[in-house]
Amino acid sequence: MKKVIIGEQLVKSFGEGNEQRRVLDQVSVEINEGEFVAVMGPSGSGKSTLMFALSGTDGIDSGTVMVDGKELSTIGENELSDLRRRMMGFIFQQPTMLSNLNILDNIILPAMRDNRKNVVEISQKARALMNRVGITELEKRDIKQVSGGQLQRAGICRALMNNPRIIFGDEPTGALNSQSAQEIMDILSEINAEGTAVMLVTHDAKVAARTERVMFMRDGAIVNELKFPKFEGTDMDGRVEEVTERMREIGI
Ligand code: ADP
Ligand code: MG
Image 1 (cartoon, rainbow, N blue to C red):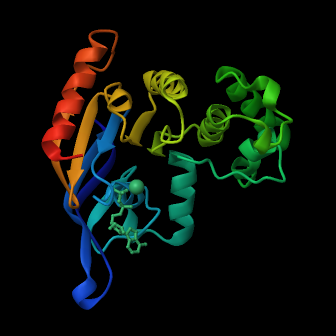
Image 2: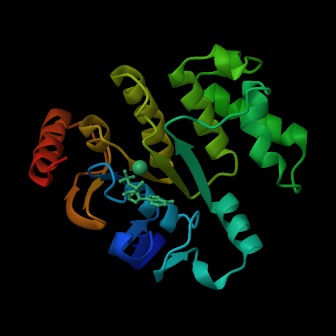
């Protein structure tokens, strides 16, 4: 199967001398085109660091990351940021948005850096995405005048502006109640069904159970993995139970 990202033998340490700690300990991960994966693990196990490494957000000490046939350590800053902008979308627990701009302007801001496109085209695209995730009427709102779930929808629109091949989400439902979290997962599942790979860090078994592969991390290594049939519908409770059981085994 074609891979969107291949990370091999990733090693990353923080700190100096006796304080030095290996946060990624020879982790190898491959993400298939269009795959939907979750990463779970105790706090501090290296989940965010892994995501930063795979997305080229942060460097690594050794190992290789291949994206779109390119090894990230061999390309320059400009090419790297171009590759990230073209290929990747990012969503976070708290979408980082500017409080002096309205929702629409926040969504289009990163895309405006791509000077091949004009503002009319970009705004049209943003409005189509907002319509799709159900926040059309919030276009002119200040970011403080919307709920957490609505803000995350806007964050998803922003992440989709350049039609990425993969969306990285670092606990994107972590600040939401269970209902809003499931609504965000509905949107991500739909986007995934259209072919965009999604990689999520989550602590929520109900979120992880909706993906097709759950990787479990501990102490900088992937220690376990669960696979599920891609298209859900069947026995979601059983899947949640399996994830929960595995979390218990790993001590999450
Ligand atoms: P997780 O996302 O699984 O909670 P992280 O990947 O954020 O874990 O962090 C793993 C470990 O690396 C933690 O012990 C954290 O303190 C440490 N760490 C992460 N980023 C840095 C950094 N920039 N400087 C120093 N230590 C860091
Ligand atoms: Mg983290």
